[in-house]
Amino acid sequence: MLPNRQIDFYKSFSCQPQSNKTYFCTVKEALPEIFMGKKGVLIVNLGTPDSPKTADVRKYLGEFLMDGRVIDINPALRALLVKGAIVPFRSPKSAKLYKKIWSDENGSPLLYYSIKQAELLQESLGDEYQVELAMRYQSPSIETALEKLKAANVDSLKVIALFPQYASASSGSVYQKVMELVSKWLTIPDLSFVNSFHNNELMIENFAENGRKYQPETYDHILFSFHGLPQRQLIKSDPTQNHCLKTADCCSVLTDANKFCYSAQCHDTARLIAEKLNLPKEKYTICFQSRLGNDPWVKPYTTEVVAELAKQGKKRMLVFCPAFVADCLETVYEVTVEYGEEFKALGGEKIQLVESLNDSAMFIEALHQMAVA
Image 1: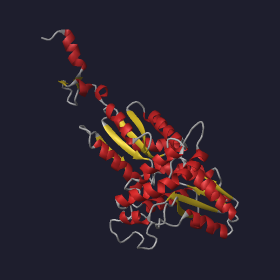
Image 2 (image 1 turned 45 degrees about the vertical axis):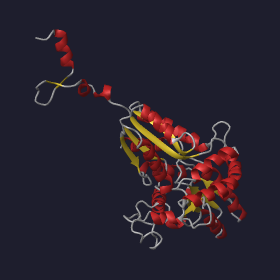
Image 3 (image 1 turned 180 degrees about the vertical axis):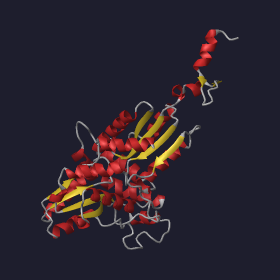
Image 4 (image 1 turned 90 degrees about the vertical axis):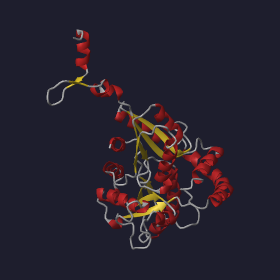
């Protein structure tokens, strides 16, 4: 017969099935919370220079533009183009722009809000999760963030690229980099990715809520300005090779042929926000900004739409940028300053930017739901 203290020990780790018959189980089965590792969550945004100095901007642009998913041409030609032409000439100009949006207190707005998002998501998820932030280019790097999660011996890893609409040049690049690094681990945890969240209800409502503050009905026209992509990348994403740019209004409705198309997902996001705001179709335009080079990009171009609306006599425009979940150079400067100046020069009065999601509680809840799904 076992001593009483042994009987008490075994009883404390016994399991009671529905038959009411006692059977002995392992300590791990009886107290799973002791042995359960954390769940890892990696959120990744595009990136930003370490500082607005030309040298740091040059380093950032070099890494960014040498990505084969961003400039998807022959590697030798890409190296010649990026290192010999784009980076040397663009870096000083871009550095001047970054200085205009750089804060002495917070630095880069993109990095500042991304850090806030990671911190708030960690707080929301609690101690069962470990949240790490990374940038696809520059700091904090994906490699550094993954090493922290590896050191924590997480049971699973959920990767969320902070791009609502999927594109090979953004989300695809993030996921490829993660897989390249994790594939070298001896022990690979359960690994999953959020492909896109272009129709996430909380995100849509968050953008609509931000827009309502400006009373959209008082503006002459509304723009939904998304980051642009070369047309060739859209065509490559068409599995049928018979839909993209070959059928009328090929992006207006999501189908099996275009469900992974960046432009089609952008149109879907804009439509859903417009519906939340009760905007008639004639009151808003979907357009694309930040074109680089002379190759045809997805149209219409925001700069051309702004010019055309000015010619039509529009005076006040409200601009949403739903491809960005944190304000950055493309929103704070390109839209507010560059397009604002162009609009005024053509007779317009005001372009008002609707701020991005940044550190809003609603967006953090959206990330929470994606992380635990």
